[in-house]
Image 1 (cartoon, rainbow, N blue to C red):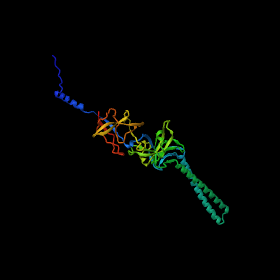
Image 2 (cartoon, rainbow, N blue to C red):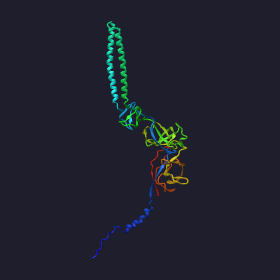
Image 3 (tube, rainbow, N blue to C red):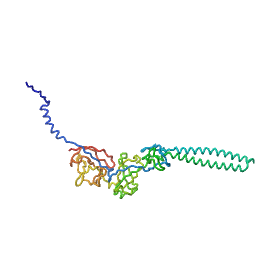
Image 4 (cartoon, one colour):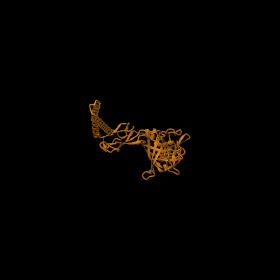
Length: 380
């Protein structure tokens, strides 16, 4: 006898499928949103290009021993701050200590001898005055005292030199500063004058970098101005002036090493810190830089600018003129005023006249703070 298997019944009735059919048009009409990122062009971004530089101290010295010796300790490492007179390193001073002790013993012995001869001379003077001793005895006593005095002075000079040599076995900081490099480790033998470490002054800062020859053609030492940007600095950066330019090109390229001097406010920058450097230009010559992704190919090339029309935020093509090759992922353009809101990501499938969602407003004017990069949601 065959038995029928139980059939599972689905808890979906005709009403369920009717609901799905009615809601399908609603899903189809819902716009798909995707994020794009915009950037507000600001006056501080108006530079011909930015370059990467390294912060170095205005004053750097190599601190070395005046004596040949074996390094037995170094009490300062790279990055440490030191104060004037602080011990930095020490060489083996056992031989110097022995020389000092021997010189000190010689001085003590000669002091006793000199004191004895002084008393003998005084006694000879008294006896000669009473007519008991001959004049020759007095002359001998005076001569012996003079020789003892000379020997004592020579021994004291030898002791002073020994103590000075022993003191030079300890290397001390000549001024308040920061250790930026160590060159020898304990156990190594160091020649006189060979720096054990490099010490930088705590105040002044310079920036060293390589710049194109074309940029330096019209530059003047002491006159050409630059702007230095770093996370520790204000948004407008710091002003710097061109100090000097290496006359030799770097690695056969059309680049030269240059040094830019900074003011005392740059003391917040750490030695070796990387900073962004841009030539400081007048407002008439200023150019805006944008990420490469914001610039789209065309005749002419263009960017997507967010503008307000009839109370709505709309995308419009904005023709621009690129100037020079990209640098550090950004490209300089003209025909784009500061304060423009430009889409910098998600630019490939946008359309002219496409509305976009709420985003940040451009700065109220030059010097207004930059707002964070927003997410702008536009219809696909």
